[in-house]
Image: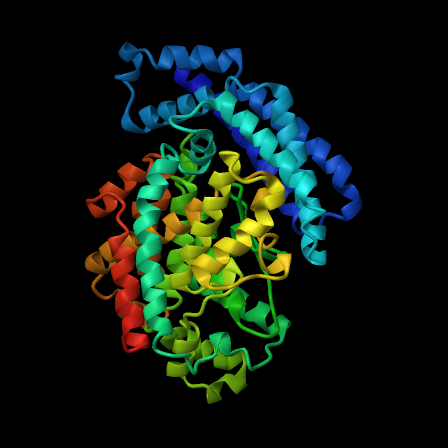
Length: 498
């Protein structure tokens, strides 16, 4: 067996464990009974250790030592080179982490998520602090073992955005914060909008919402033969090659579920679109979490909140909720594009959303630099939210406890959300040039042209290209905030008569 074939055999073993862990994670956040937690945390820890041992095994090292010899590497085709590069990157990051730390991280993640669920329900940050402290402590240790370019946070960020650093994030985020804050101020100066967000003065039956959401997911291209839609406290997506699970949450006071559905369907369709020949190889996954977010945010906002899309969506909403006919399509369009600083990230409008992410990035960086202690996080959150959004959450469930990420130790994840918006804007700019009839298709509820473009140019490639190279290939340029800035200024300038 050649060194490459041996490496692929090991990679398939890793992927099977990853799929098993993903299924367990999905179950934990949907149907797992509370009493199952002790056993589940042990299962997660055991599988994480096995995965780590296989990834950093002597057999893997032998394969990589041979494959990275110039005489062998140069004879590989481009796809095989990409696979070798990716698995080598993962091996070098994880090789020095002790098994004990891997097990502790996995166990702390399960325990932390269970604790977060209770703390959020009770809006009690104090009961969550010990779990936040434990996750942070373990992630700091892991960062030291993994190594980093400039500072420990870089090691964690690289888990989600390969080759990106905190310095690189700040280079993009600093002009983003300034540009979006100025735009929010300009919109606010126009006075309050008469359009209620999601028309929250009405009541929407949640069972009917579920039917509508399932219809929308199918219409835009989510394949229910290889996927399913469930309910959870916090919407999420789990991709397991031929089995993609998305979840949603519903509130009878508004129609925000339609947009979280579009968001998660975007994630799901990315997973379903990865070339089947790549599955099981090191590059049989998304380019990065930022690219994953570019797909979810594209369907949620660039498509879902586009005026042409309303020609498809509004009649559908009226079909399921006849009382909405009194609202009118133009008012409905404005209602789903209402700009108003709010507490909850996942329900934030397009402009203020990235400010929510900047807030979290600043806190994560402060925690990793020991400038903030876990116990101080709630106060810092309140201060930052007042600075960025002019709001002070008195209830922790509306503030520091609203997101699940830190409960599972996912430090370094949050920047991906804002990066996804920026990637999406730059990519969508290219798509509009390459599909001149795109907006006509959206009006008619024809989503195949867009989905096919995404399949051909992004989804099918898996991780053949990392984000920087992918962006240049798609758009001809490196990531630049100006595309998103131009998009929101033009769109909301029209809506708010700026």
